[in-house]
Image (cartoon, rainbow, N blue to C red):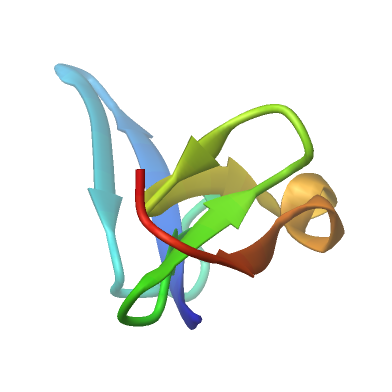
Amino acid sequence: MIKNELFVYLGDNGTITTGIYLPGTPCVKKYQLTASKDKLLTNGVKKVSTVIISERDLDSWYEINGQE
């Protein structure tokens, strides 16, 4: 599983989601999880190949074998 940090910034025209951290700028930290080859990600309810989640949900997601 590949785990990438994402940062969500609120601007005047909406939100910007990027992998770039801007020190001193308020943001919400999220994670993009991508399943390895021939695997899926699940939280016990959903099965997906890629998901963007909050930091508090990180421990709920894990890889399983198979593709649907």
